[in-house]
Image 1: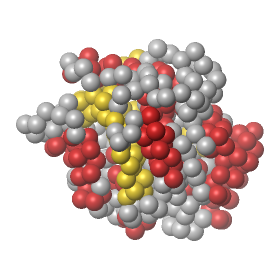
Image 2: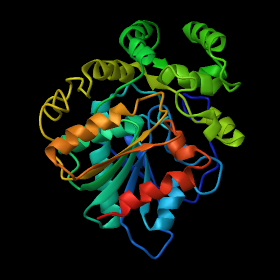
Image 3: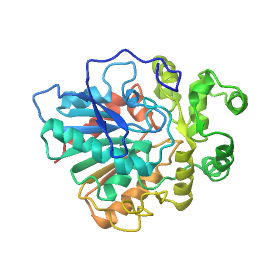
Image 4: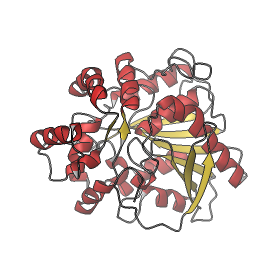
Length: 352
């Protein structure tokens, strides 16, 4: 059982596990899936979003993204960073992940593989925090990044913006975390109050964690995927893949949404700029941005604005795609994603 979450562990896979320490003394995990072909495309780092874990890339169906990347010839390293529900609940911020988690993860991978560079596939808040690290110049070994959903410019639907700017400060006075597992078993007090509200106002499906994830991360019905893109088995499996997210993150993201771009907390100003747009990106990496057409968590404009920012500083180097028919996480876990989305990801990562 995961500490602090009440989630039953899935059976251990045969994938190699590598643990490492960050400079702020946190132990994190990488899971390595070696290339399953004669091609050698080098190491590739996968980074999940907030309130989930690296398992989120491995729904119960054949042909998941890490398997597809391994078959293509990548040495796949799936990171559980400090936002992972594999970790005990902790009040993390994007800044801490940017400064401590990714440089250490990259150094660990390069040490184990003997490679000098690597590529990355990053999603949601794994993307925002990773991109914050990248443009600050903390990841010079990274040559290519494929980012899904949001990176440097979070743009959300109107109701979600109001929620971020006004409801988040109020919620933070009552709760240090939000936890979609409260849809299954809410502790007494405010969690039960909010669970009653979620059950009373959300009727898009009968999966309580699905409803809670929508409440936690935005305003859509649902927010993180289109139901028609998921199989029934995957929709049910999601009950075990969402848990604690700290209000420290939501407060920072609220400030980012208000600013129109990522801003730091100010606690690591000697390493991170106050704003990601105050200076040119300190990286030579090529960045490819993906945005689901129907993303109800972060609008496609999020990635379009980041593309414009990057393109101003390196014209013609980067890429941006809107994925027709997709939302947020269904880009990876959707039933047709292996045929509709994965080839694009693999093609972009395979480029020099």
